[in-house]
Amino acid sequence: MDIEKAKKGTLRVSQNVIITITKNAALEVEGVSRIAVRSLDIMKLFSSKLDNSLINIEMLDGVAKISLSIVVLSGYNVMSVCEQIQEKVKSAVQSMTGVTVSKVNVSVVDVDFPAGSAEENS
Image (cartoon, rainbow, N blue to C red):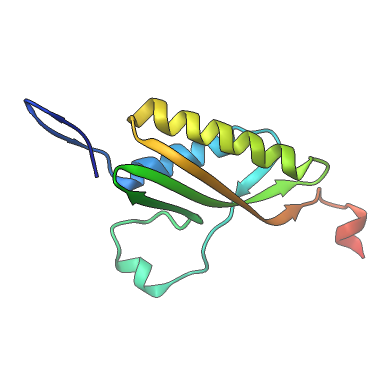
């Protein structure tokens, strides 16, 4: 993906870099337990991309649309956590790479309850 064409050459940022920035920014938000992961895919074992997190980057004309799936901690407001992730991810990716982010879609796929909680024991 081209970021900027300079007289000295072309600058490129790998989608893996954007995935890493997205993951780290999302994990900084209070209430995020973890980034959801894909189930084991045998073909992934032969891929150079070892990250199995559920983060997807779609690029169109140099603009990124980011989708990620997370697990939240119990006791946190899901909407608030998701809005904070959207803001933090967009800001981090844009400031660190210069890539414009049009959307950050966040899916909550599970809730982590503390060990020994009533929800786990029922």
